[in-house]
Every structure is written in C-alpha cells, then in structure tokens.
Amino acid sequence: MGTFGYMLSLAAINLVLPRYMSPVDFGFWQLFQFYVLYLGYITFGYSDGLLLRTAGKSWSDLPAAEIKSGMVLLAVAEVAAFALILAILSPLVSPESWSYLLVAVLGVLFFVPRVTLTFLFQATGRAQDVMTSMVAERLVLLVAFLIYCFDPSLGLPFLIAGDILGKVVGLCWSAFLARSILRAGFVSLTNAWLSFVADCRAGVFVVLSNLTSLSLNGAVRAIIGSALGVAAFGQISLALQVSTLLLVVINAVAVAAYPNLRTQPSAEWPRIYAQLSRVLLPAGMAALLLSIPLAEFMKWWSPEYTDAVTLLLLLMPVGYFEVKGRGLLSVFLKAVRAEKGLFVVNLLSAAAGALLCAVLAFGVKSLEAASMSLVFGLWLRSAVAEILVRRRLEIAGRPPFVIELACLGAYYLMVTSLALAGAAILVVLVFLLTRRLSKDVDGAARATLGA
Image (cartoon, rainbow, N blue to C red; front, side, top):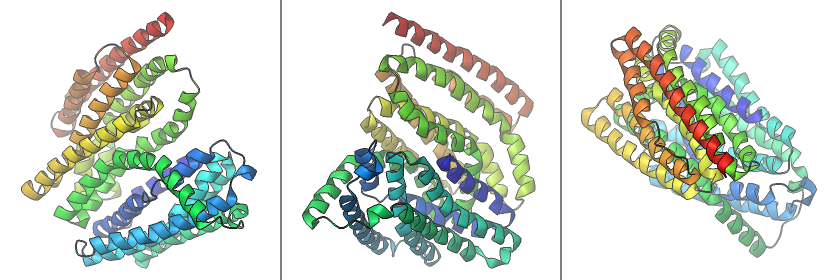
C-alpha cells in the first residue's frame, strides 16, 4: 500500500501541475525528476544485496554494526561517484540544466539511504514502517505542491525545495525507526569492506536489470530534450504520464506478484501466466479506447500543452507494452531465474529505440516521429521477452503477435482519421485477442493435468 500511494501521489502531482505551470517550467520539473530517478540507481547494488541477505530475518537478528558500516561506505562511494559524474557532465549540460542536476544530486544523497533503510524494514516484515517512511517523505512534497497551486508565483524552486525537504524528512524518520541500527558501533574497515562488496555483488545485477527496464524510456526522453529543448522534454513526459496511468496500479500488483508466484509449484506457472495474460492484455488493449476522451480532457485542463495532446494519442500504446512487459513478462522471467536474459533484452531494445530516436530527432527534427521510436522499442522488447517466457515455461503455440499488431493498426486508424471505424475494429480485435489467449489457458491447463 505504501509503494502504491508513493507512486500514485507523484503521478497525481505531475498530472495536476500543467494546470498551473508553463510548459518550460514543467519541462525543468520533469528534468529534475528525471535526474533523481536515474541517479537514484547508483547504489552499486548494495541496497538490493542487503535486502536479499536480510530477507526473512527478525530485526533483532540483523548485524547492526556491519550494516551501519556498510551504509557509511555506501555514502562515501556515492559522493565519489556523483563527483565523477558531475565532472564528466559539466561540459555537456547547459547552464540551466546544470542547476537542476546539482539539486537532484543533493536530493539523491538523502533518498538512497532512506530507501536502504526501507529495504531493511521490508526484509524484516516491518510493513508499517515501510509505509510511514515513504509517507513521511511524500507528505512534505504534497504540502509544498498544494501551497504552490494556491500561489504559483512562488515558482519552481519552491516546489523543488519541498521535494528535497521531503527527502530529508523521510530519511530522518526512517533513521529514527532504525535507531537501533544507527546506534551500533562499527566493525573493522576490512570486515566492513568485505561485507559491502559481497552485498554489492549480490544486488548489482538486480539494479542493472531494473535500470535497463527504464533505459529505453529515459534514452528517448533525453535525446528529445537534447535535440528539441526542455519544453519538448516536458511535453513528452506529460504524455507518457497520462499514457501509463494504468502502470501505477500494475506496478503495485507486480511487486506483490513475484513473491506470491514463488509460493506456487513451478508446474503451475504456465497456467498462471496464461490466465494473467488473458486478463491483463485484452484489458490493456481495450484501455486504448480511452485515448480520445483523455486527449479532450487534456485540451481543457492544460490548453498550453498542445504537443502533449498529440503525443498522448501517438504514445498511448506505451501503456499497453509497459503493462505487458513490466507487469507480466518481467515477473515470470525473474521467477524462472532468467534475469540475464531480461537484462539483455532490455539493453538491446533500448539501444535500438535510442538509435532510431536519435536519427529522427536530430535528422528529421520531428518530435512526433522521434517519440514513436519509443513504441517501436517497447514492441521489440515485448516480442522478444514473450518468446523467451514461452520457451522457458514450455507453452505451446505462437505468441499472438499478428492480432496484437492488428490492434495497433486499428488504434492508429481511430486516432488519425476514422475514429468510429477504428474503434469498432479495435473492439472486435480485442475480443479475438481474448479468445486467442483463452486457447493458451486451455492448453496450459491440459499440460498441467498431464504432468
């Protein structure tokens, strides 16, 4: 619940802000959030490795002195890494963007230790502390956001200061909850270093897999921002926020789905995968019908963001592929311990999408064409990952790629020229997709009984 509320609150803020903020200021706000998101993954795998090592233990059984020493080493390593990153990026980043990068680094220095402590609460079953540590951080930003909406003349720096202050408060509250750890002494530097390296090795691949799953989205937005300016960066960011609204719910479900899946016999996984596919995929495809009403709402809510409305119509399928990829395929690839395959798929699709985006952004100078590279990259990632999942789960039959592509064709017909005809065709194709996926459910059920 805490994770869901944390994600939902940020999504709500980003959807409301365009009513009160110019496209340029919103672009810089999104740039700041972009920096925080990706810099927040610079943990060297320590936080995730610590979660893996301490999962299932009671709080009193945690090696407090060892963890405290490891967190100090993490802080030192982060400061060194950020100093190096800033030195590398200083000649590449514009003066305006540079200030947002600096404050993002400041925020991440408070954010990462808070997340590490939250992972400890999660590992030891302190669910209430997981929730309150995230709520404490987000509540401060929400207060700053409400004040800003009543008086937008306070400016973007006020809102960013609220975000940074929220991260400080979140860390302070988490530190109070984990005071028994932080009051402990230190182990020797040698033991601290060996433990730190071991945790980093255990968690680094988890971090890389998670980071590469976001790399396509990040690469496309970064290239568009570099080629077409910060206002274009904000426009595509807003369009993606709206197109992936469903992903906020799916992500919360996916976080819980993986451990629940591991409690089921592996022989049941093909049937579970087929059943989830039959529910999630037609629902995600049918959600494309909401694009035109959402676009009309955006025209009324944020009339200055005309490019965002156009991009929403083009990028609405991003929500479908994110639901399929991150809410379904990645969960099962992790269950069958195919993290390396997932990493490679994410990396290759990100490279292909980024290359196409660079050609269209710098060569054609078209925001719309460059944005469509994201749909292509996500489709490629989804197709390869689905083939991999079906092979590992030994699901007979071919993936429903033809019907899926036909649905996309009907969708783009709906939003570009023939709205009613395209919508009618899409409804029929969603029905056919449901029937096609029902055959997978029946086949998986027979295979399970046969086993």
